[in-house]
Length: 260
Image 1 (cartoon, one colour):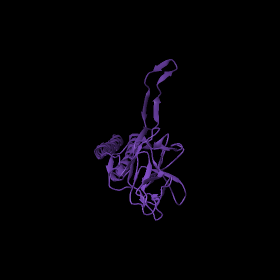
Image 2: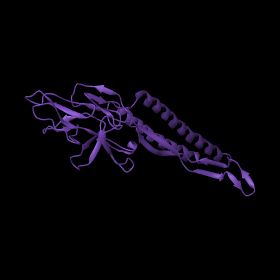
Image 3: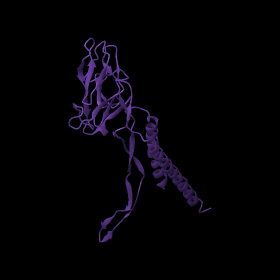
Image 4: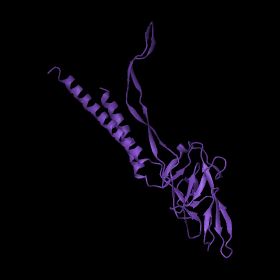
């Protein structure tokens, strides 16, 4: 009886979806986090009689059944999260398309993030929470009393002794032909893959790139209510598949006891 294996494949696929939902819900307060969605596909079909012509006979529908479901992929949704206003000059959010680029100090690899929670290291360089330097690098001069960032990514600093605002650097944003193909590396970081395509760098606010908003952070794009509804429906589907296994087991038991 194929129903046993078919229902088991459905339970296995739904278990993966529960894991994905759990990760989404656990990151509702993670700045710059992007939710993941699970995609399913059906397995091969077994036919006792295939549809179509068979010799002189025409079989319009055939006789067959599917063998279950499996996870086809997990897709990261890079939709815009809401912006939260803060009081920190180094909290930067992207309103629109684009990623901040940072450099892994261990490998020199260029990584990408929507989490604009930046800090200064002991050299005055702008870094993320893990110490990865922003690329291109922005250095805040010693003794600077005030600085801010414009929507075009230009960073302005109040020079000591003059009180004049001077542009000390400019942030460039990166985008990809297929951002869903990026590899999630944890810590709100992504790396390019052959599926994502090569990064295209550009100035904020131009040629389709988003604006940089100072003193703001992008919130997670996870919608708690939607995730909870999805969690309930997934649980019900899981329970239904388990009932199919129980029914199939009882049918087999009945068939085995017919001669008794």
